[in-house]
Length: 206
Image (cartoon, rainbow, N blue to C red; front, side, top):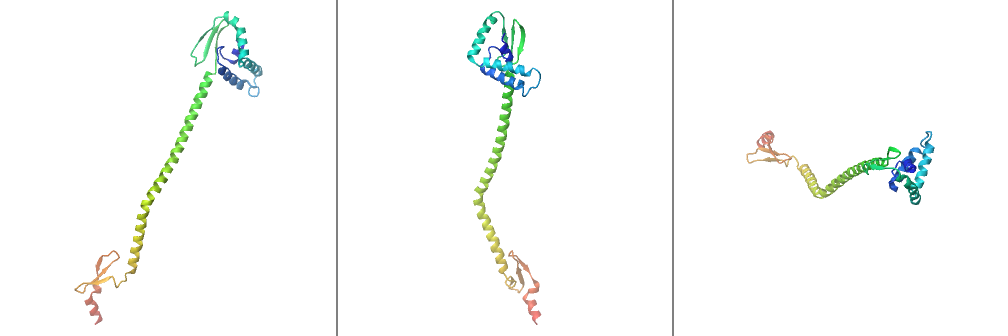
């Protein structure tokens, strides 16, 4: 009675996709290369045989047709949310069949978490690259404006140093109408130099 559906852990009304997912999950658990427990190989054979019948539309219809008389003599009610695990009750008693809905929901959640993590890493790297690009563009944009100012300042500093070097000490000394000596420094400021007054120099010459 519904032995093939029971082997895969699905309800008789399960879709073809649900049956395939159930088979893949059980095959992964019961495959002899993975599961070394006693009886695992026999259970794997049952699961494979059940999937071979239920995955073929014609063989499944024939199998369901053979179950029709048995279904008419039993009372079976289904309860539960279509998106959650299904429970059924029949003449053979009550049982809970775990479907692949929980597994599919878990896989979807993991996939969503991975997708969000990948998007976060992508946007973080994209923002860093965008920041570097905008910074470089800003530098290249303001460089033509700053470069002439730097050039003018550099030429002015060079010209000022050359003009200071050209001035000899004799050219930097000045006398007023009273014969007092004054010295002009590199910044154009005048300083009093009493030792260089003309009266002092004439007295020293005598």
